[in-house]
Picture 1 (cartoon, rainbow, N blue to C red):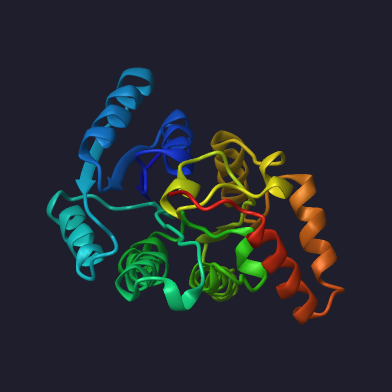
Picture 2: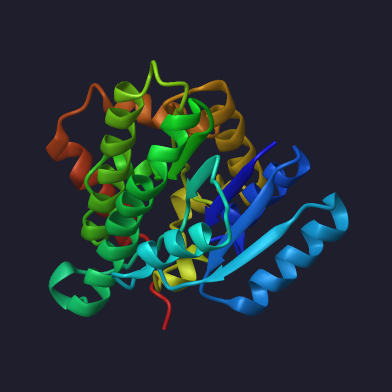
Length: 261
């Protein structure tokens, strides 16, 4: 069935995507920073689905990490059939008060690593005229995000890049999909140093539901997938509203969050 490379595979959406690919007969290359968590995921998948799992421990916020991942795959003789750019993180708070080093690491991970990995592995997909790329964006991809300005901007890049690439490759046999979920029940909020807002917390989806929607969307060739009827309705409504009003509304929602200490 081929090999799927999944970043951020140690937990959350990435972990659930790993299970979905393995269940359908794919071997896996799992990438994340935490080797212990990766080993646990790999062991569980190997025992359940008898697939071959390769682990690459890398911090994708480091500039050279994508190249090292590509070199590791080449040295192991692995041809990647599906690339899942899932790794990413956000930061909550006023832009001027956030450490520049943290912001640049976010840009490295959310934008640069995604772009580099896609560039490294796309030629093989084009040569085989098959497979696909799943880039994990967010509902944040569609709107400006005061108090998470860089994160929202990075996810806007993910969506725009993915939609453009999907159009370029529509006759190539390679599928390209952006998965853009709303709030998800993962550890994302903890790393971003915030809790969910009261408005969105009750509607948060579980990681499996989101992963399944993205996986099925990729296989069916959808360029954009937004899981959950509530969130699709919210995004549809933004098409008819002034951008300034949207930014003000997001600001109010963000202020309704409780930062973690």
